[in-house]
Length: 390
Ligand code: PHB
Image (cartoon, rainbow, N blue to C red):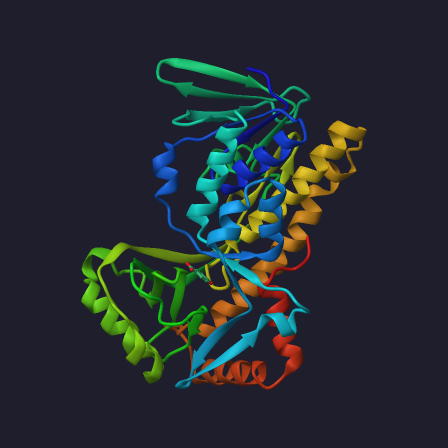
């Protein structure tokens, strides 16, 4: 097979890039290791930056998102028994976020790829990029007994943190920056009315909690737990009891509980690999960087990589201009690090760290009171939360 761009990874980044390029006449194939059902069973965050929502519309994938997603003009932080609101609309200069699950984004992208007859190959085993430092890279994968070769101009590695793409860059070229947090998030999804119509982040002495939602009939809740905990040891009842203990009384009284339809623990970590390009291989999304979920930057940061790469590839194919490809890594990383900073800041602000000293507690309290007493601080949070410009 011969295509212009071979995309490794059929998650939202790979699919979005493939869809955008296809609409501009650039031929792609997406190679995904797992089945579509498997990819669609992953539950991730559900807050989309306005820039991401715009990109989905540009990819002709925004219809259901605009119909079923909810525009949120603010979010809340519960602390010290009360709830304070960050007015996104006011402090970001008129922007907002879209509450719409990443799983739904991925589903819409698959449907769009099907509609246009896009090539998306599932259960592609042993995907391996070759000769990425040359002018004639290719990718091989196994389908049953057969080994298939895909010749291409460029390879895009959008295959997540554990994918093969980043590992194909020689070790002496790659610099990796990592921070691991000493706790995880236990999350559940339940068919119940959300306790709040807006997202509520909760700082509490028993640990962080988050009240989020997918719609007005589908709730997503999380609590901070030790890394040693297992989801199977947390009954639904135990989860609801612990969540209620962390909520301000007025919210706890309103909480509607019900059976969980999904329950899992996500560890929290930050990671960046530099550079994001090696020869003709370009990394995008989690293949190059990860954030803790606090602040929901993950998918949104992947989307800015896709945006830069999309424009760089168009300039290459339309105008023979390679400046976008040449500056991709530097440009993408500048925004990636800002998202790292914001996710780290929100994580530090809201969680209970097992190794903290009383000085840390005081600083956390000061950070919180500063935020809600300064319009400048509020602006800083709002502009990051709605998404910095691409
Ligand atoms: C979610 O809805 O799953 C969610 C929302 C906000 C976050 C993280 C996760 O910061």
